[in-house]
Image (cartoon, rainbow, N blue to C red; front, side, top):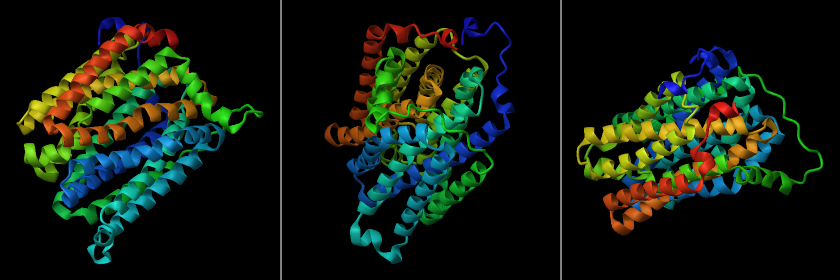
Length: 420
């Protein structure tokens, strides 16, 4: 980052890691993310082995996105109204139940897949979508309660680093375990990491429920997050930019086909392909922890999303495994810039009593766009072919950056230091 972005006072890149409960919470998030990422890869490869159909892979994303979208606003309301730690524990347990079901489906002697096809897998993916809808706003809201306000930017960088580290390890570990030991051992590994996460969370104290307006109806509370975001050009612009970039520019859902048919590297190679963007993101998040892009945040946001789109276009054209890994890593470098900037702006601009609901709106914009983007990728690959569909998505991402740069001047000129 340019030296103009270095604060005038000495910046302690490790300040937030000195808060004991925040470290525990980050470790909890590492293991839950590790489990989520492993399960995503395992389900994707299992579905590909069962169907050999790109649309079937895309439907996994849709099966998770629809229940996520339907429940997201209520999940945000719950995070602002009820004990956030209890919500996190409850829906981590629900995810664990879903993983247990997937493990049982993989036992051939039970005959579940033979009798019902892949429908039971989609059903569990829907349950997972509900779990993640409730977990995300409560995790974001509770994390902000563990640290003082002046550490929000530092916390965003380290939270992104830990998330990305887990997202690197998860697919690689999931692919290796699946490839060498089979699907059942892979699902058992997911169950183990979820159990470890729950034990760690037990050492983090609950935080008080934030104050709320007693006379508000449920519909008013559900809509408050949407109104808050749509009244703020910075939040709305940042969320919309990432939503459309991920919707059109993501190629993750199609990686099983790239691994099997284009690069011919199998489930082990798929794990490394899935991990590559996260490796790039970790490298960039560590840079941003030491040199946060505060002053020219809006400019860096636009550069990051545009770079992401270009990386995806080049990845689609690559036929070499190592070049593809490098391009996916580069896409993660650029993507992490927008992740950290958006997360920091959301924390700084949102009052505590609104954090859950604003986070749920962000989840609708960003989180569900990953899953709907998977469906879009699968459908586009089915209609126009695998490689043209990914190139098309990258071009659309570049167009969205141009549109946002022109019509969202407050976002373009965002200065996070002034907000903080």
